[in-house]
Length: 420
Image (cartoon, rainbow, N blue to C red; front, top):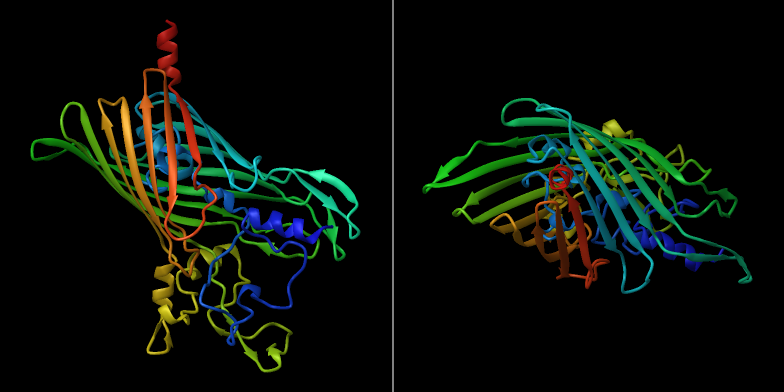
């Protein structure tokens, strides 16, 4: 198999050392004398699960845990569905991916919800990530076959009202990731990765609060998503964490007058998976213990169970990078805090028909360095709505730069009323 093509496929999906375990326990840090250089990013399987699927949140810096409920709440916080104004809704989103490099990579998303009654709501969604078409070749360049790597997830959620202002939800998710089409390499047979995950979410929305004679609402949301089994792609028992994520946000909306509304929201995200530790290295190379495992100087062993990672991921950072050290000593707290991604978004509505949005997303330079502004617009009519989003990176290239994303929403109840 053409290794250049294979590495390209893995890079496009942002992960996966699927075929063989490197002799270096943390290869991207191999040039550092203590086993790593300054960046210490966390990688997982199927990172497409963390990509914003809809254009509304995409226009607000990928903030959505506590924003006003809408049909796209499945990804951000499914417990928001209980506070949706309409009885049912459907949305379709399309996101070109790496469009500046390849023409056929994209993410499609369809989601819908239905209120069973005043206290119970069901929702479902499908997310499909196509990585475009590639050609596998053998060692002499002869074509083996063409293949289109792809990943998808199918979600089901149940949301229930727990109080007048409070709701909760659980969601289950089936995840399928086929990156190699069964190609073998170095004696290791590959296969699609499969896993099942769950979300637990909560949402709070206050009653109307009076501020200088204007109505306002305070909203809070929490969603712990993608809690599930590790994923494997090969026959050599290498398994990778899903992007289990802690998302919490707060939002404040204000009705300026009869026609004008404004909402400000802030989200924080943190992956609940192990941070790569610092492995010991001397002049002879990597140091092993009596059992043949790499010796860890700073941080904790990342080979732990998923339940253990939910808790240890808050305190397992090595804290040895210069920005994370204090007086030369490791600072675990500073590195853990640096792993939090921040989103801030602003949304303006005129007469509940036209919306303007803006936002900013920030990730520490040693934890991925994604920093970008976003902007968007929305139009909502009786039956359908249309949202757009556009991203402007400020620190490095981004797969979505110079790309226009869109989401089309349908109010099924409104459609029935139009028909009658």
